[in-house]
Image 1 (tube, rainbow, N blue to C red):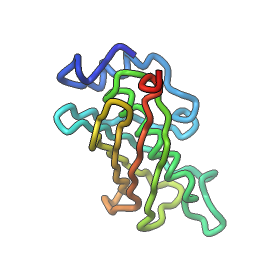
Image 2 (cartoon, rainbow, N blue to C red):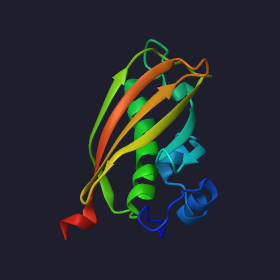
Image 3 (cartoon, helix red, strand yellow):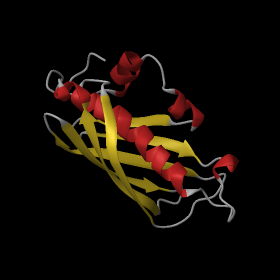
Image 4 (cartoon, rainbow, N blue to C red):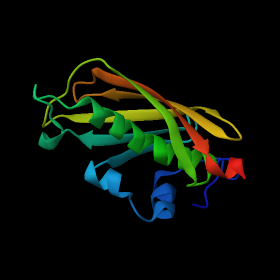
Length: 148
């Protein structure tokens, strides 16, 4: 990935998709769709359909799939913010506010809160199709190049 937030003032959805070249398997599995890249807010927004196979015994989206969806937004945002694909999540905290069910979509917007030398701290919110908050999250990514 050639884009680096220190080299490029404005992030662009089309530039990002062109540089990414291939969507990771985890994002393909969840049928994620990039909706927006906002360079001013250092944010990205993705949409995820709530699939039948995400259901728990109560019929709602299982908690781990929310976390996976958040991680599928944090990864590209960290890549865009740091300019390197060499990073890993070292924690991901998720709070659940209301259930979603198959047939719904969740829209997740994540923002860079702090972009340091060795870590990128981000936060995100997930909303259902009725614009109701369904989950929130925070995450730290470790930049592996900083360990060298």
